[in-house]
Image 1 (cartoon, rainbow, N blue to C red):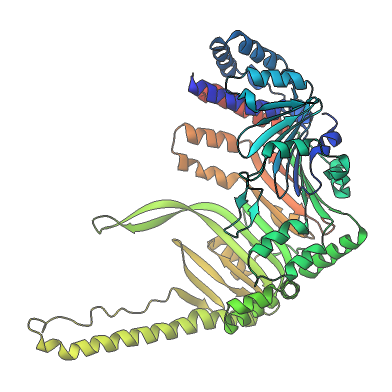
Image 2 (cartoon, rainbow, N blue to C red; image 1 turned 180 degrees about the vertical axis):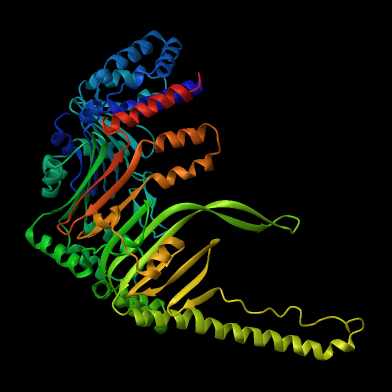
Length: 585
């Protein structure tokens, strides 16, 4: 029975997502103005695109019938009503839904179509503590524990929670101390807050709502949210960061997901409360970023799992670190030599920066067994490549040779010399020790084997997790790769346009790739059901791309293998089949 109830809870969770448009601006009146993160779900659109009623699945239907048979008449009738109409419980699960977060709480907001019915259903539950359910003037509250409560009236339902979690050992807590506050009262106050205190008063949020799609995410870069955290990091942490954050108050971003025919589409946009803050944001971006040329990605071949590229201005980045006070902070933590090296490397960086993951390859991993014998096994490891354009490649090449070849050789020579001297000292007294005359006292002196070798001027090689990695500087570009094909292209200068290089040209940042490489991981799951499920899921998808433009907008997509059906419908059909085949009865 417990297993059946757990499965029913899973079904209910799916049903809330797929069966949940009301007046969303009115629902948003419950969200506090200082919320920095908001998720909006257009449930009506999602339900239509999914074209799936989870309760029509034969396994789920059977589970529901078993559940009804084990319940009393009243509960059984409630289940029947819910199956016929998701709104039968009193909450508007077919309307818009919001989730928000501010520095003191997390909340979920839904519409209500019958406040009294929801109260009655709650009271009918054997797990409800009736003494915790309160009603006043048509508004209801119920405490779910020391850190959460629900509150609702004839229009709106709010699930309110305050966690009081410390962040990264900083002493700064996100949320309130639930032992010191009345979470039920806080939920009631939040539910009944005036509109002029809600997030609807924030102009960037209104702009965000006008662009919303199936799933929409809003983030507000509020400096007052971050200031307490930075203060908690210590008195020596740069306060200039907080001042700089204040200059960008009024900046927000929106990210949008839409389930379309043959693809899942993505969009993003920046919002600004006024022209001044927009100008500051654009100037800052222009000082540290530039559009991608895309030639680094031309060294790639095939369909990479991931290829990310952007254009960076090292000197602009270093100047901004100085402005934020971070550079002076680092000077106090590092040596003068380390700071000098870091400054030289950052300022020398100028142009495209790219990183790519290729195919999974099998590499042999060796280890010492319990009996001291060396053993090995094959493991999956990725082919990867990194490129960074610089102003003066000769300076970087000389630095690499000095640190990786000359310095290491010098240290190794000193170490071997010290070991040889110590053994020689032992050798002078060894003959006087009975039985040691024939022992080779020099047998422990090891010949130095460098981990990094220079194979030609400016080009080096080393072992990298069982693969051979090549790195160095060519044509004012630093490269690192354990993909022999990519290295051969770099060495010969062979460049050829491909899908990811074409996409990246003229963009501020791109992220793209193919899911083909992931399909090679099927053997990680063996040859049973898990491998079959993984492969069936991956077969639904082809490739993906995300693009950021210099006008602060972005777009992207995940391509489905089946171009004729809605992407969400395809995903739902997969899970419907999975439930039918895998849910035990």
